[in-house]
Length: 373
Image (spheres, rainbow, N blue to C red):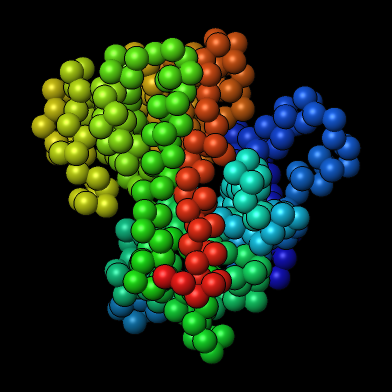
């Protein structure tokens, strides 16, 4: 069922900008430069619907836990809703709405026949065994089944989910439908209808966009230093590809902190989150930093590719990079954007920089609809 509007914080709570607030402020700033009917802008401030579901899970010890799941569906004018499913303890309804808005813009930027969607379950996947994660995914698919489908709403991997998660989701949905529906999700393993390269596509597009921005600014990539926050499915491919292009990647990080080498890291030698979770800090590097310190390094290019809301009004004045390329979804708050504009630091937005993921998802979706592998 569609849920009510998300609640707002009380005066006693922190006033950290939410993804929804950021997305709406960005919409208002963009609308000021366009001749668009105010009614259309007001409509785009709100999702078509948000589905909230309870997801019961039988734990390995025999107990039952019930988790909350969401699926925000922002706009379907261009086509089916499209966007990731995340498993994270900080998932909220407002976050899902804001992220679904960005997916609408991202699909429009890439001229894809999709609208924006986003969803997730409020759970820490690190607290689940593999069997528990599978059972949770399958039950979530069953709960969302009335609202999704290959021509209705097509989820994909996001934080805390991966190709295996999508395979479980597709299988659970298909069992309910009575036939294989590979096109219900994208980002699957190639053996069950996925596309080769989908897993690295967001990071690859970040690297390509960064390379082109460097060239546009008239810099020599071999004289360019780069810091990447987050060394997972987006940050690691981006860092490694820029390293291969000749840039000097001086810092990368995971959730535990950052490693720094002013002479450049061998990014292919540093283990990614997928290769060895949370192992970046074990790598032998000249210096260890916090994630906050990485954001303030004196580098040419900063790529925040971990989580949202890391560049804020509180630290934007301390950022010393000359170019920001957004790898994560919503890493820069609207207040930080204004600071960067004043300081004349260009910011390449996530809706362009990491759009390789949804672009390859489109190819995968077409492949599945046409029953080709």
